[in-house]
Length: 229
Ligand SMILES: Nc1ncnc2c1ncn2[C@@H]1O[C@H](COP(=O)(O)OP(=O)(O)OP(=O)(O)O)[C@@H](O)[C@H]1O
Ligand SMILES: [Mg+2]
Image 1 (tube, helix red, strand yellow):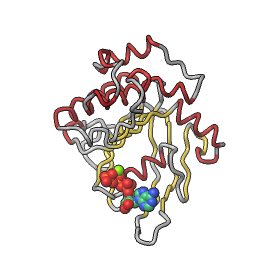
Image 2 (cartoon, protein in one colour; image 1 turned 90 degrees about the horizontal axis):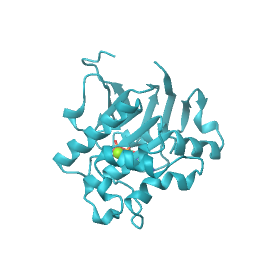
Image 3 (cartoon, helix red, strand yellow; image 1 turned 180 degrees about the horizontal axis):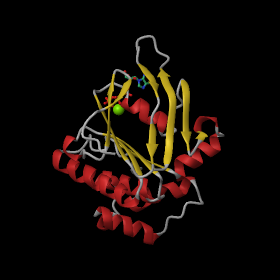
């Protein structure tokens, strides 16, 4: 077991008079190559938590350790280097650049970090795995939701990250597409020994070996079950 990310009492309080939401002190560990599922009602704080762990949003208090270093105490440059190189993100709304072809969207991480090695070989290989090789020259508006999300998954994996953060990646897809895309994502990260933190409601994709959390009013709880890990 290799520890990848650990949070120590992270809390979040938004500066808002109307919004009383608080992420309650949360301490969790994420190990290399494991899959974590987070469920919970809308507004319960799932994205808030994911964004803090993913290095996108600083907690109000508490610490996030990535490879034993306090992430938010690193310089801004170092933080974005880690986000670009070691983390991958998949969002509900795909977040592809409309003007770029699928292939250029997949190559995008290179734009932010010249040291990242992305070549045609690598793109073709991952496109093949995701069944999108014939779509590489298409632009997002020419693609279905399921196809766009598979492009976004390719973009997240192309940098060979250590961890993927996926926030309801199938939330905008119909049932069948949703099943296919989520299964692809889970299979791909499993094959690569990549850690996955997945916010989803797709019950039938959740397997007993995954670690399941439930978020309720800003409080994260481990779901007891047939977890044999
Ligand atoms: N930047 C922000 N400023 C103020 N309040 C925010 C901000 N982001 C989120 N919130 C509030 O924090 C609470 C939790 O939001 P969050 O997006 O984490 O929920 P969620 O569980 O991801 O919901 P959903 O399932 O709808 O995506 C909500 O009440 C939301 O309005
Ligand atoms: Mg959310």
